[in-house]
Length: 235
Image (cartoon, rainbow, N blue to C red; front, side, top):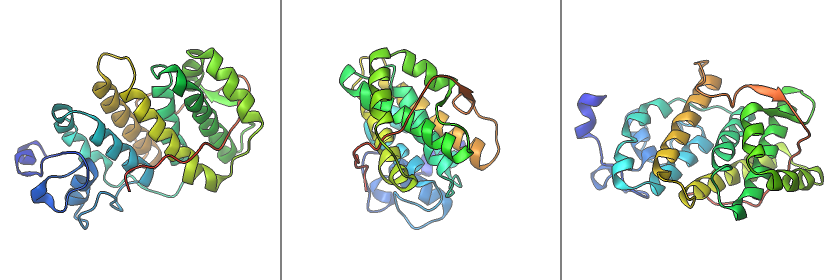
């Protein structure tokens, strides 16, 4: 791969008509996968692809170029298991929650609880189970945590609603929360988020070892789920 990087389209923001005009992360993936040129290729799970497009569009040029080696790892990571959507949403929300501005913390905390509730439901586990990563992230924002729990107890979420609205909303909220956070290097955090989410998906879809503890579910206090408003990603 490294020997051919200089011959690949240059990564830049947004859609591109053809490789001569550049490429976003997912257009480059379609190119390498031998698919029709598209930023919505079939080779990658739609929600993972949405995260990759958002990261691509929200880092600077230098950090975007550094994403190129990640592109091959996203090819072939696709499937219909709703657990994948829930893991992606959970990784995004737990990463952004501790650094996000106060006005975004409630929505992100609700996203954490919604993803955990969906995973518990799909696994046939009792509601209220939280991963260690979720517990730590929620403990960073105790006020938002308690508000989110009250909100979630009063709301119900369907599997269709989670896949269509709540999970994409969590990804969008997380990226915006990181971009606007008061941290030294938001681009580095966005890259790490994409790397770890790819690793999570590979662990689920290919059986490769995970890189973080988001995949380890540990029982803690009560949790719930809620439908959050739809947040558009680049179509």
